[in-house]
Every structure is written in structure tokens, then in C-alpha cells.
Length: 496
Image 1: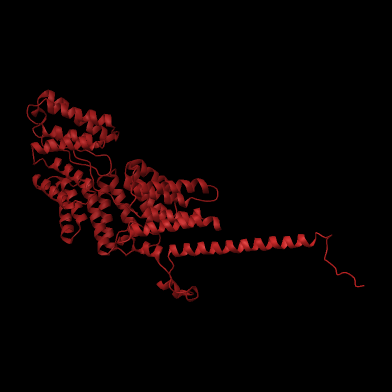
Image 2: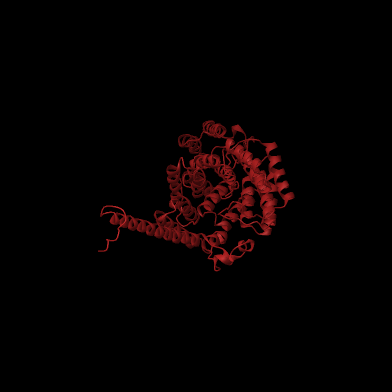
């Protein structure tokens, strides 16, 4: 499954009282650029300014080096909080920046605590509202879209349309909600963000995603969580894809070190059918940001599509390092390993593949995909002997297919796979010969029916084998009995 770049950008630190750094980065280390502090250097007491500047320098330094650790985040946050403590009044920017420092290391609860303090003191502090809205949206598993849009709209209004991060995230949420009016408004919000800062890379990235999504939507493309090799896709408008690619090219000229734009370019190349260029783009994104989960997953998925199993395995392992509990990463790794199974590594690779599928099932027991793939692994590899000893494995494959059917039923994205598994041929084999049989659904046998027939064939073969063995034993017994009187054939006694 190809994954697009998610617009979950790192929060922007504040340069001074009320002034913000001008850039942030999605899916990787933040980048900071100029901008002056409101009131200038002399607006804070000297001891406060020293601590505040110490925190800012740490943010810039560690963002550039991408060497954040819990200890570094704690120390950076401490500098800002000490600056805030030295003030008689509430220094909102310092407390907000402490939240930014905590968030760099994924210390979300501590970050949220600081953002809430800021918003409680100043409900118009739009940047804190943006981060808290993103946290809440993530906690809802991206389902509570209406509250998230409401919060982003409030942040946009409070900033008088000057908060680029709020504008881009509002556009992303509007696209996710997805009606025609939303798409029009999303485009306007992205254009507003670029009008505020024509070098704001997340806005370029989301605009490219906007054109790509629009092109696919116009083609009636549907998403599926179970991608099958060779599956027919609707042809996407070439001009719309060219427009999306043009936006990525403009963005790369602005900033060639922004990893997400290469991931988005890769997605566009996939739609164009230019898989070599897609692989190259995904690889560039991975090199620029080793923590870029989506780029690892997309690089792996494309390689898996044209049987680059070793490359896919490496990328899925890199993705799992970033997100150890990701279902799709473990299942993808299982598929890559399965593709590498041969006679030289059969037992080891089979065990490893099965282990990754079990890991996926443990992460989310209700998702159907793992059961489908484990059934195939069981049918095609564990039951490879082809005799009666394989029937137990084949019966287990049927159980797994049936579990898949139970968990996938009623979910439109699995309709094709359900038919592939459950179809039952109603016409006899002799009527299902020739080209028409391939298009006649009454001749189609699903995987479960095929496995049942294989079990029956194995049982019949085993019965014939046992019968042949028994006949051979009887023949040997007769031969041995006939030779017990001295050997040779018996002759009649002479008449008197």
C-alpha cells in the first residue's frame, strides 16, 4: 500500500514575544529561518533574555543536527521554563517553546501541558491551539474531523490568516472531509499560506498533494487497504498529474533538502506509471530523513511490486525502527520475506515470515489482511508436501480464509478479495473449459473451494497409495506361501 506524506508538521518555535520562526517541516526535522523578535533584544530583562536565547539556540542547533534525545529536549525546555519563571508576568512564548522542545522528542504529555498553560492564559495564542488540535485529532484516530476543523479555523482567524501552519493543516483537514466545497476552500488556504511565506515548504507539499488527490478523484479512483498485483486502475488525468509534479519541482528549487516533497513526487510518478523515477524519489526522501516512515513504506511497496524483495525487506525494517508497532510495516515485511523463500532457506524464512504476520495480528487482531496472507502462506508453503501429511496445514488454511471472510465482510475495500476467497463454482468442470470459462462467474472457484478439492484429492491419492501397498503386500505373501514347499510351481501327482 502506497502512503502519502502526512501533513503533521513539527510546531514552530517563537523567536521572541509574539514573533514566530518562519518555517516548519513535516515528517522530519524542523527547519528554522529568520524573522525578528517583537520589541527587539532589549525587551526582556537581561537574565530572562539570556535563558530565552539559550533555549532558542538549542532549538536551532539540534534541529539542524537532528540529534534530539530526551535529555536534550528536557534541557532545552528547562531553559525556556527558567526564563518564564524569572518573569513576574506570564511569558507565553517561553512556555510555548518549552512545549515545542518536549514535542521534538515525542514527550507529548509534557508538550500538551505547556500548550494548555499558554492557551488558558491567552485563548488567542493560535500556535498553541494548532498543536492541541492536532493532538486531539490524532487521539481520535483521525475520525473527529469536525472539532479539528473548528479549532484550525479559530487559529486561522486569531492569527488574522497569518499562521501558515494553521492554514496548511486546515487545508489538509478540509481535503480529508472531502466534499467539493472543502476542496475549493483547501486550495484557497494553501494559496494564502504561500502568500504569507512563498518559501513555506509544507504548503508546497500539501498543494502538490491537493492536485494529485484532485486528479485521482476526477478519475473515480478508490482506495483499498489490500493492493493486488496487476489490479486494474482508473486512468488519472495526465495534465492534472503534470500540474502536481510542477508544484514539486518548484518546491525543490526553493529547498532541495525538504524530504516530504520527494515522497509526494514519488506518489505522482507512481500514478504516471514511472516506477523507476518513483523509487528514486522515495529513496531521496529516505536519505534526507532516516525517520521518514512514509518514504520507507512507499519505497518498499514499489520494490515489492516488481519483485525487489531484498530492497523491500530492508525498507520495511527501516520503517519498523521508526514505528515498531505499525501493522502495515510488519505485514509488508512478511510479504517481502515470503518472496525470498527458496529451497536454500525454506525453514528459516518460513518461520520468519510467519512471525511477522503474527506480529501484525497482535497489533490489530480485527484487521483482515494478516489472516488472508497467513492463509496463503499456509496453503502454498506449509502444505507443500502434497500428501496426506499436508492436509492438516490445508485445513488450517481454510480456517484462516474463513476468519478473513468474517472480519472482511461488509467492508467495501475487501469486496474483490472476498470473492477471490469465497466464490463457489456451480457448473461442473467439464462445462468450464475454454476462454468463456474465465469470464463465467459460475465457473469461478474461490480459494476455499480449491483448498477443499486439494484435500479431497490428497485423501483419494492416499487411499490409492494404501490400496496399492496392501495389494503389493498380498502379492508378496502369496509368492512367499507358494514357495514354502520347496520352491517352484506345484505339479499334479501322477495317476496310478
